[in-house]
Length: 64
Figure: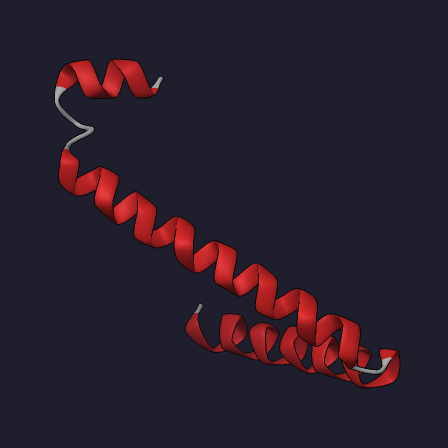
């Protein structure tokens, strides 16, 4: 698929550089998330997840 995009001119050096920046962000985010997940108690983590789900639900209800 990437070969076809490169052949058609959609995969340029700008796209490749932006892809690498995005990949770096994903790696840093994964490492940071793993560190935080190992050091946060399960109860606090559960409250954070519930709060995130609640806030996301309210936002969806308000925007639609």
